[in-house]
Image 1 (cartoon, rainbow, N blue to C red):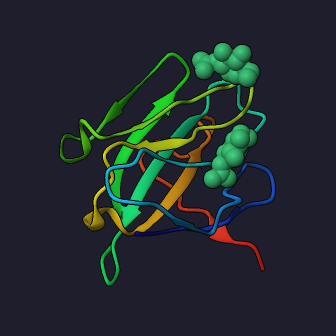
Image 2: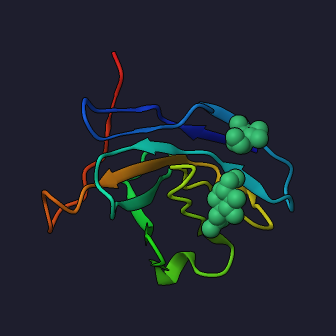
Length: 124
Ligand SMILES: *[C@@H]1O[C@H](CO)[C@@H](O)[C@H](O)[C@H]1NC(C)=O
Ligand SMILES: *[C@@H]1O[C@H](CO)[C@@H](O)[C@H](O)[C@H]1NC(C)=O
């Protein structure tokens, strides 16, 4: 099983995913790390999944104290936002071959856009 994650990069508010390619055995629990940086005290963090030749699909969002997981990802997918560690690792339980995809972590500062989700552009 292969997992790919993309390093996010943005000048002020940013997310960082150190692991670019991750492997797992079917049935395991997989954690995909993401740390972020923002001056926003109430950040919204998002995870998206993009399958090979697919488009990014919204999976879940987290904000301090709460969050929501999209219906089609409920059960095995979740993320744990920790504002003191500024991390929002995604965990996939009972991982399946069909979970092989690119997983994006994104930050939406509440001070700016309210309707769209920004996908961070990779660093040069
Ligand atoms: C994820 O982050 C934790 C805490 O920093 C670290 O212990 C763990 O090894 C990381 N996992 C991967 C796959 O990089
Ligand atoms: C956040 O991380 C800190 C430091 O590792 C830990 O003590 C705390 O329990 C974590 N909080 C949550 C909500 O996971």
